[in-house]
Length: 512
Image 1: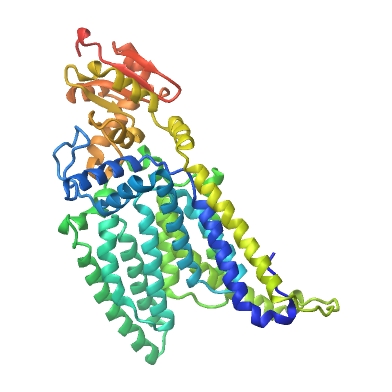
Image 2 (image 1 turned 90 degrees about the vertical axis):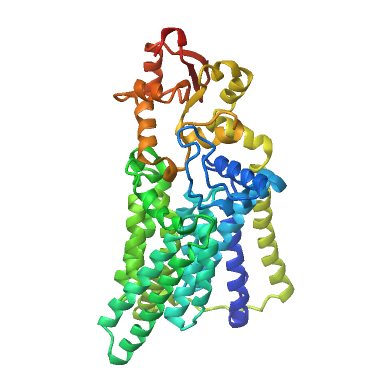
């Protein structure tokens, strides 16, 4: 309950707005505080530790045997160092806290961009939170969502209010390109604003057209400078290849769930659709022509979200402020056209203003209660015993322990391991002595290795030739993979099995 008597509405409005903002950000923190496990977390931690030990960013692969010694465009080296240091100091609690704080900071920036009263903004922020929450995990992409929100804020302030703080963007892009390869998201927003200025100039009068052309020159210069800035990185100009390398992996959508198109039969993925439909409705009902930058941004990021569910988060960050402005215009127009709907017809009863100390006590109690729940959840989900129990259900914890206890089978004659894709990162952390076949670095492995991995686990044509070519003697995969039956039929021995993983060893005596 937010205490706000009618007689003091004007004086209490700023306090109420601040209270709503604090409460909604606490709710975001509460939703983002979760068990800090992700399939890619582990290889990021391993690379971060390697960088800390060597004193230089890890730019050559040493984690796999399929790409061992190859150059690796490690676009997230700075995030990896940060995550490794956080894990050293704060363990799982530190990782959970980092994700929750970054999520709350991102949504605070969104709240700043929105239109409408506090409760209306809170509704939009929470909807955006539900959409973006599917990608909040302890991995570098959380920093890309934060920088995307900052980039959108600076561009929006420039376009709508004339506040020119665009000089901040080049250093932001330098930092962004060292933290994560998601910097193209920022360039996409800038491109949408640039295209939007062109479209808006077509509908403007002569005076306004000059304003649009001045903005176009500024945005074009900014696009060039920021594109060059991303090369200020240990990888140098190779950073420009990252978006093309990743998108160019054609097998991603069929092999890796986060790159697949959304399935709206899944309730968890439906909020993306709700946000998209609401945004379209806001455009239709607002009663004004949408700015070019607004609808072009929505089209670009909605299309990316419809192609891959990992893009839900960026869409939420871009669409939520635009939705708030257009939907509030629609609500405001409806209020003016139908004033009786929002006016009480009952006689108001005069109320004595509540004492200031009582209002503050109620509000502080509410903030304290939600804050306490958020902190308790943060501590509970990051407790080592809780994390280990969750980890054992997702990763081959016991199977790795078996390999450590029986190193001799995996060491002869070549010792190469074929592993499940989702476990590659975990194996690089839990058992670094045994290089993996593949892990989550899709831009490094590309279609060649990922397609070979998929052929083996699905038992496709040529699966035995792939195992022979890489001198693989150990296979660790999920029990329900088609490959498990084929391995047994072709002389491989099952030496370990549990509900999560099975391990097969090649029967050397039977040859290949």
